[in-house]
Length: 117
Image 1 (spheres, rainbow, N blue to C red):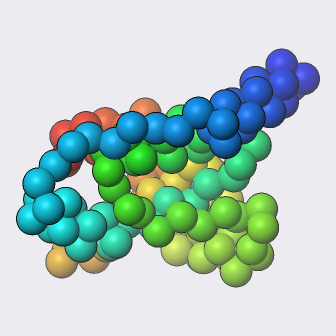
Image 2: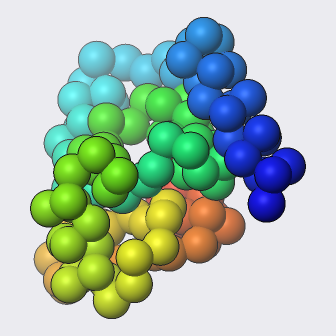
Image 3: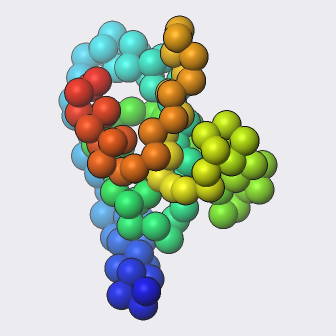
């Protein structure tokens, strides 16, 4: 448990100090991507290594997902529990034509992002 907390603190410092360089795209491509990524909500915690990894991957892909820190805002935590069914982070909610999709594991989220973008 202690090593996970230390890893999370170290990653949090790195996340704040080392910026991520996003993929270069044309203005039109980035506009389409921005519109599409606004339908994605990332529920995360700043002290969770998996959450930090997923957030950085979103930044690297140039996605502007709606970020919801569940430790800072109780309403986000309640959304996560009521909508997805579990208070686990990271979680990506994708709003689509067929309804909502809740992805809970960081591996599933990263796999979805890799296939989609």
